[in-house]
Amino acid sequence: MSDSALSIAFNPAGIQLDPKKGLSRQLYHALRERVLDGRLSSGARLPASRDLAAALGISRNSVVRAYDQLYAEGFIEGRIGDGTYVAQLPDKSALPKKLSTNLSTGFSTGLPTGLSTKIPVLPVITSSKVIHSSALHKVARHSLDLPPSGPPRAFRVGVPAFDLFPFDVWSKLQAGFWRKPDLQQLCYGDPAGDARLRGLIAAYLRASRGLSCTAEQILITCGAQQGISLCAQLLVEPGEGVAVENPGYHAAAQAFAIAGAQVLGVPVDQEGMRCDLLARLANCRLAYVTPSHQYPSGVTLSLARRLELLDWAEHTQGWIVEDDYDGEYRYSGAPLSPLAALDRQGRVIYVGTFGKVAFPALRLGYLVLPNALIEPFAQRRSLDMRHSEVSTQAVMAEFMASGHFQRHIRRMRRAAISRRNALMAHWPQGVEGLGDLPAIAAGLHVTVAVSSLEREQALLAQANEVGVEINGLSRYWLHHSTEPVDNRAGLVLGFAAVPEADIKSALARLSRVWQ
Image 1 (spheres, rainbow, N blue to C red):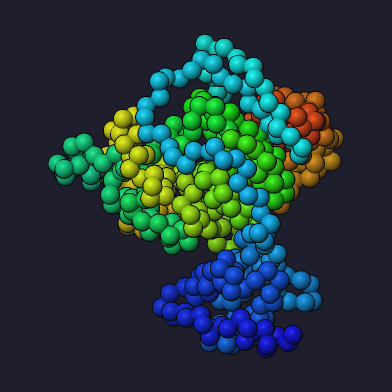
Image 2: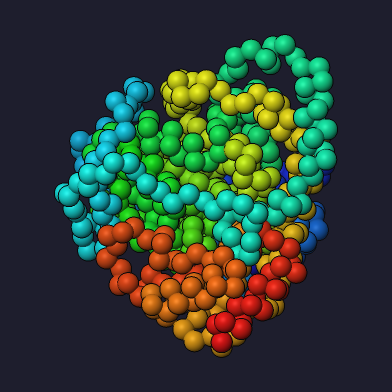
């Protein structure tokens, strides 16, 4: 079929674009919706960018930017010398059906009886079966490694360039709030959070992430971790399975374990969580994922896997907790749309945080909740701590409304790119057992392969001797993982915490001791 015939079938005339708004973003949304609702089927050829631009009466650059974003999110694919096509997406009829008939579709809003001192072993699944362990470890207290404190060093993970935060602006806004506070704001507040801040967050997510949500769906939290803990308290019954990525974010797995869940580690490959293995799990109706930038591997959950995951949640009447911890940091094109933007069944809880844009001590995050969960989550949070601290919410609202927030995000993204480039330019070469530094397209950290666990530990010890802070990839795996030990080895480095000069200095010291 010719390009012109395909263009007619594609019907670009049905796309209405407002020239007063972002043309490339509007076109991206229009094409994306046509792929998702089937009007553009898998394998369909798209018009050349020049032809589509002429048909719509817009610049070719606008079409190219829309195509680039669709390509980054996996909606389309390029074939060398043969044009642009809609990606091959999973056939819904071939996706796994509900595996168990005894899964509850409700959720508990009651208070837990207390934290158990019996913490279950966290089993993992392999490609063929679930490895269960019935052993319960009696411990006096539930331990978890706390994040390092003190001034950040190279290469601390999970810390943004908060040396660039506009503290002068923040302090003026804070002083302005307390100079003549609204007496209403000094009373007990809404447990869901400051109404103005919630509205601004919803508007920000609609504009920057394509996430259609309202202020009523936003619940303010004390950071992302509290949001994850609320999900564990309300969405999991004792003994139920919860799927987490392996390797992954341990603090999330521990939050679900404390709530009484059987935590099941699902392997991650170059397309993200293995959804085919997730579908084999019985009595599991909640999955925790980091789809935009998997923690710690850095891979992006492919579009096909996203649709599989959503289908799994629909068939099991389960929940997906999406942690978008560093979604602002994408270094080519716009930030990827979250999994929640594809959700049509109200199965995704979106977890966001200001800690990766401002500074960790701010302790300000939020959830985007499906309508059915808004009231129980707000009530549960009110029993924990009534509401978040009022002045911080009010100041952040003014910070966003005045345009400082978007300007700061742009500044932070530029800084992260510059610091990433310093890492790439000065990375030690030819170190025994150390893999090549991979491309870094998003996020604030990078993971580098190491040949063996023994070599990983040696490199970490040498780095520590010269005052360089690096995490071993082995610490991100669940304790009872069946993956061969040497396959778990690697180095995880955060590159945004310190300026370029400190990065160069740290890499010079590493080069000396590693060689």
